[in-house]
Length: 293
Image (tube, rainbow, N blue to C red; front, side, top):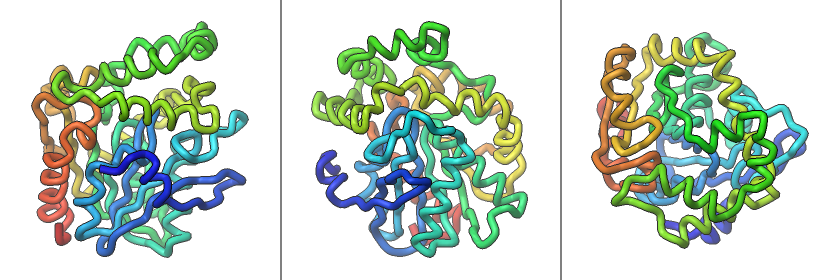
């Protein structure tokens, strides 16, 4: 596990559309591209990082608007642009082949990349697999939290204005399992990341992916359902958004049956149960991705 300060110190910065983008790049071997979710950052991967880099080159960035990266207010945020950002980083590092490990809305970025791969739109890039965690592959399974519904409502501006560290920490802690709650230090770190570059003043704007899904959701579902790439979904059964209530419905809907369920784990499996997640993922890569895990 890395403290937030250790994580930042070991990172680097690239420029993307006049924005500074923070990223980590470590290890050797087949490349794993880790894509974080809302409203966090690449630091979400810090507990699985040491194990993953033993046999792989692992890359994770803070998307535009998140973590230690720039958070421009007047910016056209979109899943497509965040996908472009990841490809731009890979291009700068001369990487052309990679596996995707994605969490939360980062899954949409992963699905967009898979869609481009399957449609022959990635030019020299090649996606090798997609492992998704804690996300609504199917829009009808999405169960937004009250705070998300409020931020997207006509009074969202007021909710955002009244947002505080206490409210943020309470809401974040509520999506973890009862036995795997974040520590006070971890919650303080998540808040610090959100506040960096005044991200807490635009937390509602960063829900852009919900509107994007209304337009591109069918494309992303189709990519999941029809791809010949190895895909896997990991679900924490204690996740209030995508947990036990979604599992049976998911099994009915999906044509991709590779599903792993974690007991007593909430919305952040890679944080709450890192050993279990890395074991599952390494097995997936070894069997499905055909790489040394």
